[in-house]
Structure formats: C-alpha cells, structure tokens
Length: 211
Image: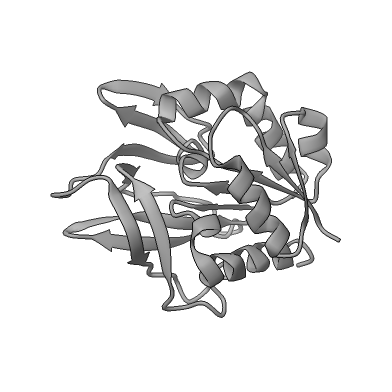
C-alpha cells in the first residue's frame, strides 16, 4: 500500500487530510519528523490560516529542506490551501510581506472581490494535459480563502516541461487554483472537503506515484 505522510507543522486541518488520504487508499501517518517525511512515498503539506504563521511553522520543522530533498529525488509532494501558497515566492497579508519556499515565482496577495473570504463550492478550469483532474473534469471543489496567486509567469528551458496550471474565476477575479509540476502538485481548494471529486483527485495523486 502507498504510504503518505501528512506533515504536522502546527497548521490546522491535519486530521481531515489524514482521513481523506486513507479513504483514497493510502496508509497515512501524521508526523513532524523530517526523516519520516523524506522516506514516505508521498508527502502532503496542509495549511490553514495566515501565510506568515504557516511559513514560520513550516520552517521550524525543516519544511523547505524536506521539500527540496524530496523534489531532487522526484518524490511526490502535494500542498493544500496555504500549503500551496507557501510554495510560491512570497505572501502579502495585512501589510506583512513573508518569503515563501520559492518553488514557483509569484506573490500570494488579497483577492480583489466584493465578498471575501471566497468560501464554498466553485468550478475549476483544468488544462487538457491535467493528470490531477483526469476523470473529474467539470466537477466543483470547496474553497475557503481570502488570498491567492493572481499572476503566473514562469520561463523554463525547452527541455524542462512547463507546469500545468489550473485557474478558477470568482466574480471578476481569476486566480491559480492548482498546479502540477512534475512531482510537485498543489491545490488552493480543499480536496479533503470536496466529497467524491476530492477523493478522486487524491486517488489521481496516489496513482501518479507509479508513473
């Protein structure tokens, strides 16, 4: 059975993430131990709350180094909600600028929308090459957030595949709702709160381990 570690770094939402991965068919352990996180088949990085607080907790358990070493070894990582946001270059919340992991360029900033947080079910716009959304195109997913990545630009040499980026519209706002970049996947929405569609997405993530 595929073994997944949910990284416990002081963020909320860890128990629901554990249960969701178990429902998707994984053997799951909740751990803050770096060696355990490195050894797992898959690593899930949850995240609830402020960018700065999550990044501080993530750094305290050696999260950036864990991510870097796993990606060098091409071992899958999935970031969820703020666990996705901290993978970007920086976050701006209430005037506080915080450096993120820098796996992707980009700034997490307040959504420009009449009502925030963006809370509830919404559609996504996956690219045709998406493996994350295979078999669940057109489904809705559950979002709870007031901040997001509204601009995406990443130039790579031709030999390096470009990430597959999924977008979501909220009012007149459009933001990044998922990224697939080799072994590094991330979602702004919560698969663990998204019913059958979320379970299917996690099953797709687990299936990617064997690819």
